Structures are given as structure tokens and as C-alpha cells.
Image 1 (cartoon, rainbow, N blue to C red):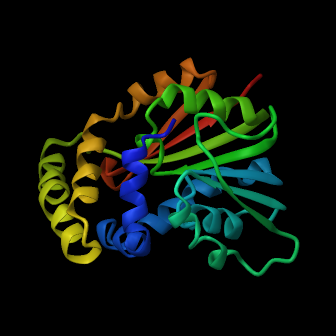
Image 2 (cartoon, helix red, strand yellow):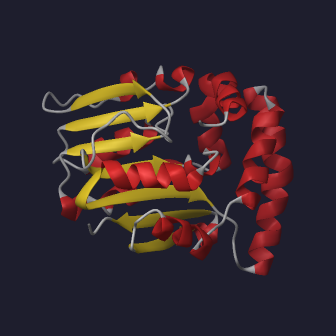
Length: 232
């Protein structure tokens, strides 16, 4: 199961989640999502899974970037987050959004159901990342791709030190002042530091069945995009 305590945090901050994302990332998080979705253009996916969909920002970016899409399934375990998603659906009659409350560790979809998968800052919150990645591999069709955005820690020592001061002290303060929930934005830097970044995460993806995988860094490693391909 996805961690119920983490789900409770997101339930509490749902109303201010988008605003906090813009503040924390200095407005870059939407651009990162669009750039991530662009890696799926050549695939021309028709059916996409947006896992840990939250309020629908990644689904919106994918819908705007990928004209081939006919169906987007927005899946999240927190109904308070998903409640904000329908309002973001683009006005495209040929495009259908399906809002689904479900656990990433046990997806309610058949094998090879999706052409592509997006995950925006969600894998870090899964209690069993390998199991969730295996589920993603199961529901992705042969030749399909998954793009995963996650928070990162810069490798450059000076940039890392500056970023950690911002992330550990300023972000929780913003969380208390803007979202009224310091704990949620203390969890963010703590969970980021515990995450197996770069090669460590790619190793986990390979264990899940994604033999071909790579990563791309944004803003010197503040955010990292993982690109996974299913060969079999």
C-alpha cells in the first residue's frame, strides 16, 4: 500500500499544493513537466497513464504537448488532490480524461494497457518503489516509455550546499506560512535526501524490468528526469 501518513499530508495541503509548487520551484515545475512530456512525442501515444497525478499538472502538460493523445488516466491515492484535476482538462473534444483513485502498487489495469506513463514527483512517496515500478512495467505496452520527474540533490558541492540551505530551511518556512503545514514541507527535503538518485534509481528501474533507462538533470540536479523504455 502507499504510505497512508504521506497520503494524509497531501490531503491536508491539496488546496495550496499548486501554489507551493510554483513558489518552491520558482515557477519551473510546469516547464519541467512540458519538457518531460516532449520525450514522448516520437512515440505518438494514444493512451497515457499519469501516475501520482495529484492536481493534474502533468496530465495537462502531456495533453498540451502530445496531440496524439485520446485518453489520459489520472491515478492517485488522494481524492482531495484529484478533485482539482478535472478543471485543468484542455478543451479538446477528442481527448478523454479518466480520474481514478487507486494505489500505485496495485494498478487496476490490464497488462500492456498504456502507450506511455508519466509520474511527477511521486515515486519518492511510494512505500515500495520496486513494486510500483514493476506495476508500471506490467501495464506499459511493448515499446512504450515512462518519464519520471523527481526532486534531486545537486552534485556540485557549492550548488548543493546553497540548495540544501534553501530546501531544508526556507521551504519548510514557506510551507508553514503559505500552506499552513510545516510538516509536509519538512517531509519534502527529508524524503529527497533519502531517495536513491541517478544511477541508484536506474538500478531499481532495471530490476523492475526496464532494461533501457537514462536520466536528464534540470537546474543542476535540483530536479531529475528519468526516461524508461520497455523492450519486451
